[in-house]
Image 1 (cartoon, rainbow, N blue to C red):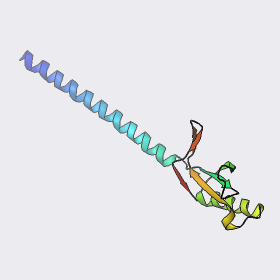
Image 2 (image 1 turned 180 degrees about the vertical axis):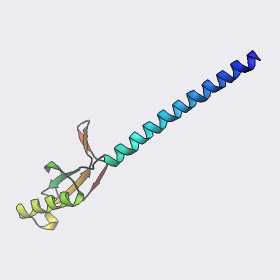
Image 3 (image 1 turned 90 degrees about the horizontal axis):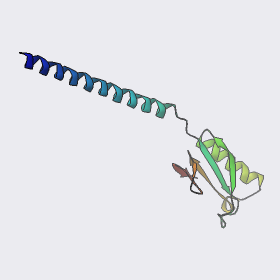
Image 4 (image 1 turned 90 degrees about the vertical axis):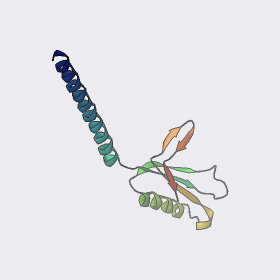
Length: 110
């Protein structure tokens, strides 16, 4: 009888530990989920005034809240410099970070 009670206590302790571990996992996953929802995407703009020389660029020096605002900046820069459509290029990068000497973006688009 004593043996079966200690076995029961051990079994209950294991169940309690498993419930605690599960609770911690649920909390961590919830935090990650909420952080992904709250995280704002930031767009960066890169303008190339000479489409034949992409080593020369103008950095947007600002962050844009949307892809459209980044594109508007690039188009305004082209008008400001009086460039035709076939003379320039631009990129808008999503959530860019500077790593190992390069700007690395989750996504780039023009």
